Amino acid sequence: MLRVGYPATIAAELFAGFPEEVELIALSEHLDHDVEIDVWIPDPYPTRAQRIAPRLRGVRLVLSLMAGTEWIPGAMGPHVTICNAHGAHNIATAEWTLAAILAALKYFPLFLDVQRSGVWKRRFEASAHYAAISGDSRPHYPPVMQEELTGKNVLLVGYGSIGKEIERFLFPYNVNLLRIARLARTEPLVHAVSELERLLPLAEVVILILPLTEESRGLIGSKQLGLMRQGTLLVNAARGPVVQTDALVEALNAGKIRAALDVTDPEPLPAGHALWSCPNLLLTPHVGGSSPQFAPRAIKTAADELRRYMAGEPLRNVVQTAI
Image 1: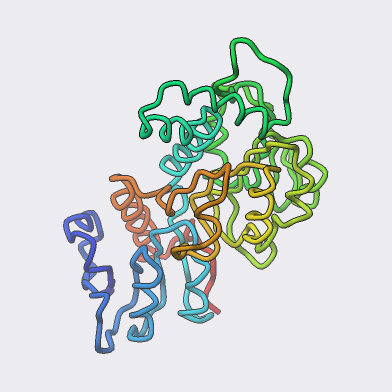
Image 2: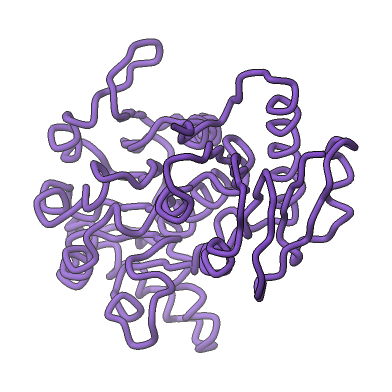
């Protein structure tokens, strides 16, 4: 019987849809002895999963509940097949991305501060904010209190399943969408990542939703930020190290760009870090996929993959094939 280890922190009833022919073994994050299993479903929080990885023996297949699996090959080695939860987090992450864009363009962080101050007339600070971030100092009447997403030029950097879901969510806003992926393709038109620096000056919103690899690490640095238009909104729903943090802090403090981040480098972001106090920044602590539907969707994805594995069928979400 196939032995499947799963995080004890996840309710056992969520695994009711797993094949009856497997033995499910709850693994505590404080595991203090070796355990023999064939398939491992790691805890969604990498630090907890990494804590018990050295205690696991016989693992042949890892079924991650996350889209990103960058830490798993180093922990488990090359002789293990690794699958991610491709597609399980599309909706939550796409919704966060759209919400973050709208919140930034509608100046919600500023108006939340106005609400907390209880001073209605502070709303006119929005006009000064618009002039400063956009570089548009012309007189406007009525005063500018927000911006519109509709019709903006949006550059989508990463065109996997989450990127495509973000595109679907953006469709009603009639944005002018440019797409970038590792390789160029047509129908729809997707540019190669080598075109990034040519396309950056065209965008008013730049969305990062690509995996963290050696090629994407530090992809957005001082040069790339400098190529962006005045007031460009940079949205990072990917991984923190895709953006060079020092360069981002400098660009935000200079008033060159604005940003909405769900991920940072380092992460967790320590108290007192410069990012916490940067202007023109909306920051959430890596919550983009964490809806009530997170676990059920991801576990169903793992169960479907496990059935294919047991039937000897090709796996769909392989990110590393055992050697």
